[in-house]
Amino acid sequence: MSVNGASYSVLKGFEDAYIHSLLFFNINEFPISFMSKFLQNFKLVKVLDFENTPLDHLPEEVGDLFHLRYLDLDNTKVKTLPNSIGKLQNLETLSIWRTAIQEIPITINMLHKLRCLKVGYFDEKMEMSLDTISGGKLNWRIGCLKALTVLEYVDANYGGVKLIEELGRLSQLEYLALVNLTRETGRALCVSIENMNCLKDLFVSSINEDEVIDLQPISSPPKCLQSLRIEGRLAKLPDWISELQHLVSLQIYWTRLSDDPLKAFQNLPNLAELILEIKAYNGKQLHIGKGGFPKLKELRLIDLSELNSVNIEKEAFPLLEKLHIGGCPQLKEVSSGFQHLGNLKELNIVDMPIEFEKSLDLEQGSHYWIIQHVPSILLHHKVHKGVNGYETHKLRSKYLERSRGQTINQDEDSKNNISGDDISASVEKG
Image (cartoon, rainbow, N blue to C red; front, side, top):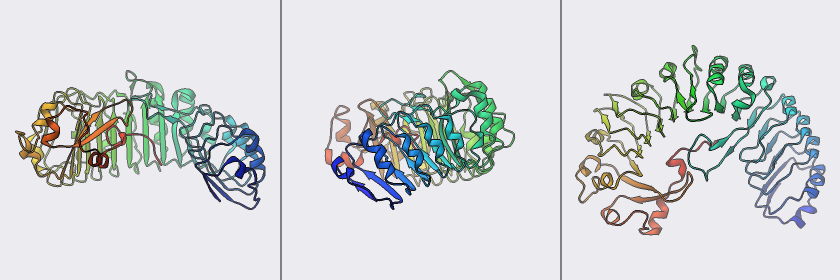
């Protein structure tokens, strides 16, 4: 049963003991007094999806839904989970992403069929920082949940080393996301990861910008890893990254690397997306050798304050389609090597100096000849706070003659508006 836009008065008379799946959309209210009775009427329900509804309370009666396999509370106002959640012996998916729930009751460790657990909160109104994601607080005895394949956005500092060691028992994990890592928990994670032979997606984030995490001591990295995102200062760029033959997406933020990381990445055979963003690299030059990055389709170089040159040799990036450059005040001009990017379809310039933008102007720019083959060149400027606070325009002389932030042809610009995910990658996953 799918319920769209029904009023409270309609819901009061809504009873059918034989319904197995309930989906709610555009519901105005779920009174506490109503919810308990409501759940009692659906003993056979297997799926409950409250995502984006005003639900603010999940009563104890939810524990009586013995057949429940899927419970989604994403982006609701629920603040706590009842202890009765541990009675849902058939529950396979519990998603409480972007709720006010911080601590998860210990009874969750009784859910031995649980395969997917998504917790934590992402605040898109904040600027990109290590605090943008708040991890969920789990009891450290999580190792008993052997069936878990997805465990995302857990506060590693809450459970500490014991929690990380328990993760090593979850040999079926395919997706793992941890925030608030410290030097100590980072080292423990290296040991646990070696037991995760099925791991495809790994996200790790340090507790603050100054905390140095050491991910080097992994002697046997997950062979199936396809996506890796690291946020936080690294003691050293892990050598094992260059061994990840199946890696498709690599994102690093706040790592403060001093050596050119592209040398370690350019021979990865299946890498399609590479992001170096927000203090990821403190060096002045990046160099891409001949034939480097054979499968790369998207490259982002954002907020690298010391970067002053990007050297691209012929036959590098043969498949590159999207390139983002921004927040690099020392980068005064585009490299002539950009002319070799014959497959480039979109060039995004993000908060670069007006002189840089003018040099690319199709009528007056001294460097327009370098990028004249690119079909779409977009300018993005920050206009308000938050990861979505950007305004987008196409590159053209009339725009460059005006002050920034002034709207030009709003109908056309609205078609070109992009989200913060295209400027500073968000972490929300499906």
